[in-house]
Length: 391
Ligand SMILES: *[C@@H]1O[C@H](CO)[C@@H](O)[C@H](O)[C@H]1NC(C)=O
Ligand SMILES: *[C@@H]1O[C@H](CO)[C@@H](O)[C@H](O)[C@H]1NC(C)=O
Ligand SMILES: *[C@@H]1O[C@H](CO)[C@@H](O)[C@H](O)[C@H]1NC(C)=O
Ligand SMILES: *[C@@H]1O[C@H](CO)[C@@H](O)[C@H](O)[C@H]1NC(C)=O
Ligand SMILES: *[C@@H]1O[C@H](CO)[C@@H](O)[C@H](O)[C@H]1NC(C)=O
Ligand SMILES: *[C@@H]1O[C@H](CO)[C@@H](O)[C@H](O)[C@H]1NC(C)=O
Ligand SMILES: *[C@@H]1O[C@H](CO)[C@@H](O)[C@H](O)[C@H]1NC(C)=O
Ligand SMILES: *[C@@H]1O[C@H](CO)[C@@H](O)[C@H](O)[C@H]1NC(C)=O
Image 1 (cartoon, rainbow, N blue to C red):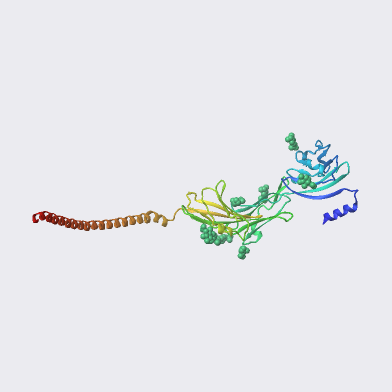
Image 2: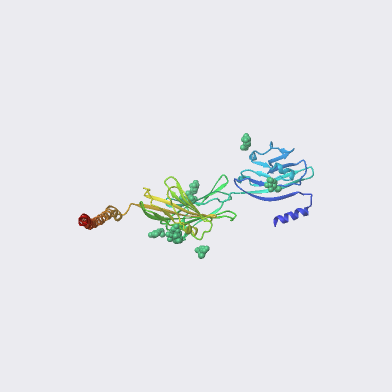
């Protein structure tokens, strides 16, 4: 609307004044283009200024940088091939917060001259919010933001905010960028509440939320382990990351992307999630029999989605097998083995006896058969020998 009115005013003002103003917002660290156009003609001359400092100059068909302000040295360029087409846009490399301000694009040709103002705003959006547990405090950290954001703490179930007592409620500035670094005291146990840190950008267009909860578990050495982890609410497009927190560093053991239902397993742990459950926000991890001798283990289960993360830290104390189980292993299992062996022996002996009996009866039968054959043959020989005598 404002622009429309501006354009109308320009039209009313007539062709004498060639001055307009535009707004441009760029992201800190990225390249930034300040737009500027003029009516194409020969003998182009382009000057970019900021508060009387020369940002960039071009005439006689090439860049003229001997009067360039040192602050802009090696950081600017024009689109040389576009200049004959009336494009005097300036490219500012790796924009800084300090680059904010009003720029003037002055252009002239054999036909006309023109001035254009570009008001440059530079922002450093919130990129991440990190929650961690340090001793008896939860710490919320988000770095390099501009302009200064606002932030707040809450818990679930909620408790009076004066109980939270953020110990460092300040927003610090360094090199024109702001960082939130705040801590709250853990009330009772870290597993009693979910701690939520919310950071909102100055223009209210971004709201980031990070939450953290703890849970304690007991595992048994050498046995499979199931670590529950549920998303806080209906999440649709998220990444689930499971990591093992070691003494020195963390190791990602599994990632799951809900959109593609793609699971990536890292490391030798052979950890698993049930994909159909994970899609619905149940990221429960199944770890097979652990060989590890580590007695205390820490796992990090994080659901990340657009501008939000939810972390569940699980502290597992690994116990040796219980006394009952040890008894079982020491006595019952060998006993069972003995029973099996004994049973095997008995069966074997029974079989053998049966086999012996069998062979006895067979032998008797054979003998009988032999006897029969014998008598038969004897009879035959007798008849044979007797026949000639008869004939
Ligand atoms: C000027 O040229 C650049 C590079 O081709 C292009 O990205 C930009 O849109 C052009 N600007 C104008 C105002 O035409
Ligand atoms: C710009 O680049 C030149 C050549 O690479 C270098 O000598 C000079 O120091 C640079 N200037 C700044 C301000 O970085
Ligand atoms: C948990 O894991 C997430 C994702 O890998 C990471 O951003 C976060 O810093 C970790 N948190 C803790 C307390 O280790
Ligand atoms: C807040 O944190 C900053 C930087 O970590 C530190 O310099 C300052 O002393 C802290 N303030 C309080 C009250 O703890
Ligand atoms: C934290 O939870 C434990 C058991 O879940 C309970 O015994 C304890 O009273 C709780 N502490 C606070 C401060 O709520
Ligand atoms: C979660 O989503 C399912 C289906 O998409 C719906 O039936 C259920 O009511 C939702 N639950 C909550 C707590 O929003
Ligand atoms: C995953 O969970 C679903 C629903 O609870 C179940 O029907 C299915 O058998 C499970 N799959 C595996 C591989 O355990
Ligand atoms: C989560 O999934 C696991 C299997 O991976 C299943 O045993 C458990 O019952 C599920 N929990 C809930 C609350 O659905």
